[in-house]
Image (cartoon, rainbow, N blue to C red; front, top):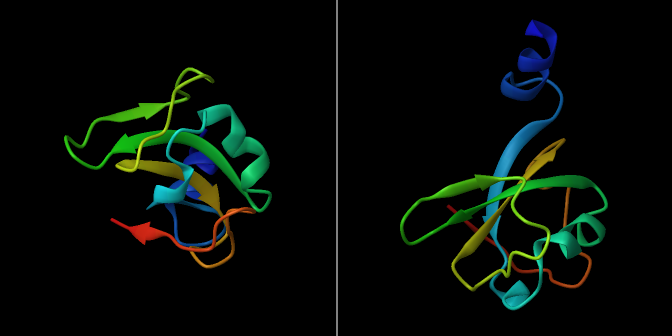
Length: 89
């Protein structure tokens, strides 16, 4: 278990990243699986109240204030297939 934590929380290997993709508003969370081929979408964060939901309902509707939490190699190593603009927070 310690190795898993080291891989996810350390600075070597994959890490957690959160970015907002306002253009995804109205889409369902389950679509994120296919939209981020170089990352794994694991949750959402509401940019207004800061609430976090890991593994939300697959039919959770994204809004313009929803951030996507992903596990990726680096913050510039992944992109959304349909959208190129992201907002970090």
